Amino acid sequence: MCKLPFIFAFFALISAAAANENDQHTRILAASCAACHGTNGLSQGGTPLLAGLDESYFIGRMIEYRTRLNSTAVMVQHAKGLTLEEITALAKYFSSQAWACPYFKRNCLPDPIPSTPEN
Image (cartoon, rainbow, N blue to C red):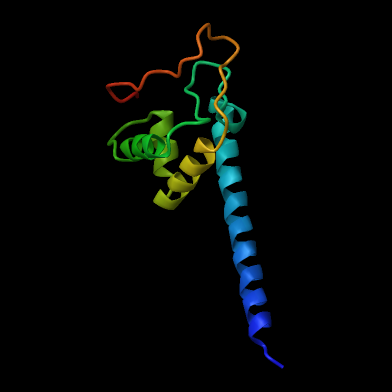
């Protein structure tokens, strides 16, 4: 009897379990963002929307926060606690979320990209 199909099935199950674990870890990280940026990145306050944000923009901003020296800003502390892999996973997660116009904004244009870093 050929064991090859069973070997492929075994590795497929292991891969699926690892992917599920990574997805769960990313969702847990994203839940910590929800305190300020809203559920699924849909901010209801003055913080930026993360939902639908371009992956490369998100990654760039987080790396920018990570490289700041001697800053006590909240985002700097959060970014320094994340690995590059976690930042990339969060970028993919938030970019896959649907962007929606917050109820308190009169126009539905996304916030402009700031020209200088926020503290």
